[in-house]
Amino acid sequence: MGNFLLDWYFWTKTLHIVSVIAWMAGMFYLPRLFVYHAERAQVGSEMSETFKIMERKLMRAIINPAMMSTWTFGLILVFTPGVIDWSEIWPWVKALMVISMSALHGWLSVRRREFERDENTRSGRSYRIANEVPTILMLVIVIMVVVKPF
Image 1 (cartoon, one colour):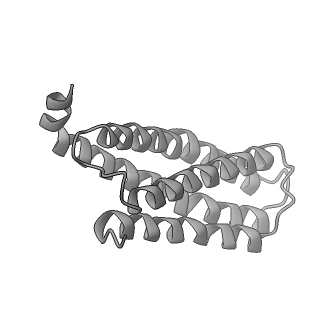
Image 2 (cartoon, one colour; image 1 turned 90 degrees about the horizontal axis):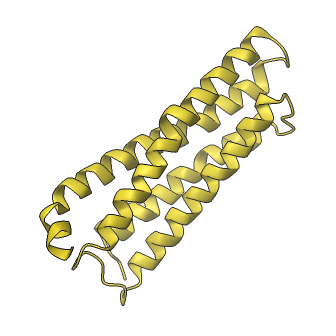
Image 3 (cartoon, one colour; image 1 turned 90 degrees about the vertical axis):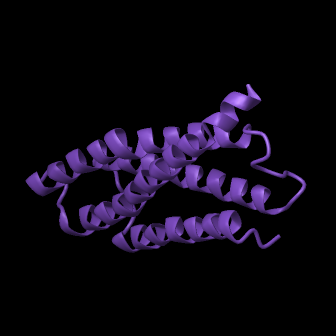
């Protein structure tokens, strides 16, 4: 199994990076849609219904599959011999940030379902704040992988 994973390392890494890019694109865009939905669309309006469609399609067609493929290719990389040295601190920090990103994904998914049911109680400001979280998490993840500061 080890040789197989090593033979496919660069393809796995490529697919992981592409998956991460797609996941992050959705994670940046969905909270922005929520801002506009919360601030500009009256419940039951045509605009609100349009936002619901956009949010549902973004989550189901891009964000969810991208997260699953990110995790899949990431775990394959974890099990590829020689890629990760778990005695160092950086992979643990990265893992914590990826888990945090996944938790945010779940939180956004719950918020999307609230909008779907016309039960949103949060302000546009709260979604503006949520819109910054993926950037911070991504920054820490990239630093851990590229710089490996510890």
